[in-house]
Length: 148
Length: 117
Image 1 (cartoon, one colour):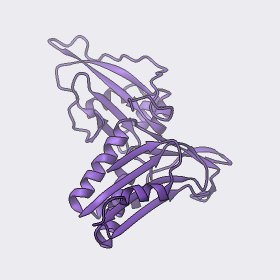
Image 2: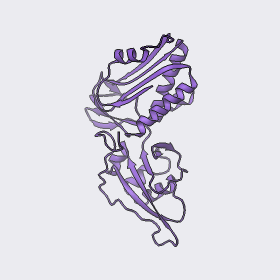
Image 3: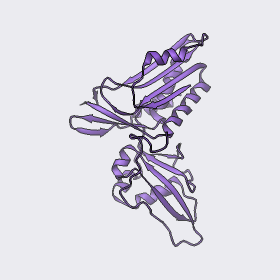
Image 4: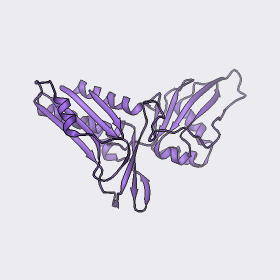
């Protein structure tokens, strides 16, 4: 299991290669990469700053991964989430899961993202031509998390 | 990473009085010190990344009772922490409900619903 919160970018290829390395029981790799969009709620986005709660954020991500490993038959999981200033096109988050078969890898990847969106302490502040604004939580994210 | 160590995490430069004793004259009361951390939009609304509250109380404080103490300050505190506002709480970095008891030396974080990912 790898959980990292960092300001710098990450190399998806290298992270997936590391996740798979040395485990020949793996037959499936599922990954989600979240990126910064240039539009949100009908406003142009010129950038955003991601804030976290050092200590709790890492612990929350580790709890979510541990929960995923109890629920799904997965081989390994990587979660990397960036903080600090980002611009449209930047990578924000990587969730990668390896498993023997694809169904478990897809499900575990989606589970980790749904939980991360509702339980991991990160907050986005967007920059728009009209000024800065904090992103509001979405009810649809709570609904997605309740499915599990 | 240590709490508050990140440039993008909590900063602890409180702009207002950091000590708010309550019921100071209550008989046989004990002093409970709680480190409060405000994050994201709430840190900006309060102009304050955190503070230490010293509560003189007979009853074990809870998240709810501490929120009531903060609301009595009025202004942004009363607005942002009013009943019905979406606010989340963590005690010692674990998400908790408002009925959670808070002990001397605990860290209580107060923040808006999360928006990462």
